[in-house]
Amino acid sequence: MSNVGVNKVILIGNAGQDAEVRATSSGKTVANFSLAINRPFREGNGDRQKVEWVHCVAWNKQAEIAGKMITKGKQVFVEGRLQTRQFEDRQGTTRTVTEVVVTSLRVLGRAANGSPNGGGQRTPASSTQHAADDEVPF
Image (tube, rainbow, N blue to C red; front, side):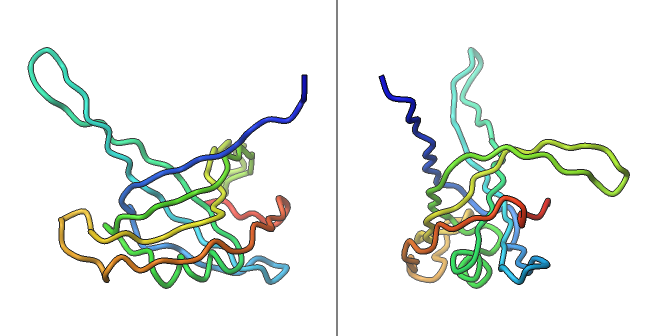
């Protein structure tokens, strides 16, 4: 039996805020954004909806694309891999975050309010190079 695993995530959700883009100390471009994933379910007294918030991080060309195209409310398709990492916050507390490292993204045709968001512009899959030591906390 092989020791090879699969770590692949595919999400469609609405951006919780505009993508935040910055450069690392080594000059790499990184973008952070969150997606709200709605999951309807039925309770005994009626239908409800649960929202899962997923943190996403994009690097290099994908980060540049995210910075130009992801704005609050836009529906976004994201493909990538799960990653869990630790960092120390400003108060010195060790924090753990699980996020999706984006390998492909595209903005879909509708915003959260149902209005068109630019005609479903697409972005190609691009660089999947990620350096763990360059990742920046939210």
